[in-house]
Amino acid sequence: MTIIDWISGNYVEIAGAVAGILYVLLEIRQNPLLWPVGIITSSAYIYVFFTGKLYADMSLQVYYVIISFLGWYWWTKEKSGSGSKESAKGHGNSDAEKVSEPSPLEVSRLRRPTGMKLTAVFTALFIASWIVLDKFTDSPVPGADAFITTLSVIATWMLARKIYEHWYLWIIVNFSMSALCIIRGLYPTLVLYLVYAAMSFAGLKEWSKSLRST
Image (tube, rainbow, N blue to C red; front, side, top):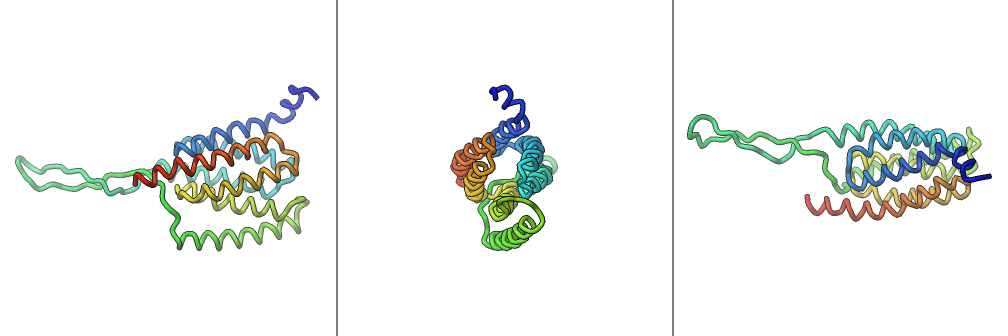
């Protein structure tokens, strides 16, 4: 098989991998364009994971498409901030009206109540996914598939809310997915997730700057 033949047979997976790398670069820079790029990436991987019989991961990509629209809205809409502006009333009037200025969604730390809720959601989804994959599909790795899928669901929601700790979850997901790609022979996707893993550490460092500036 020539390189051209291999590329022609895997062009969807390759395109998804390239778009995925661009997605993480935009994520590190906190650029809202990551969301439309994410929609493209997830659409490609719906097909890739379906053909690879990774059904939970395929369902995860559908979730990614949905949460991408929601994250796009959260990242670009404005909310009330602490800023203010003064407008004088009348000539020489010292009274001023403070008007709340909008500010974009900012990077924040995970709060304990939110963490406890997310842990409970993760546990419930993980058990349910594992049972469904084991009983009703021909997935060869139902436990691993369910774990990666469920942790990715939590991480993506945290990303949409700009919660800093989501990077730690991506590190776990990316290394776990790399191992799974080796097992299933998805080598272009393996390269993608190894790059993802390296970039997750860069994301941790870059987003920490936003925490220090708030």
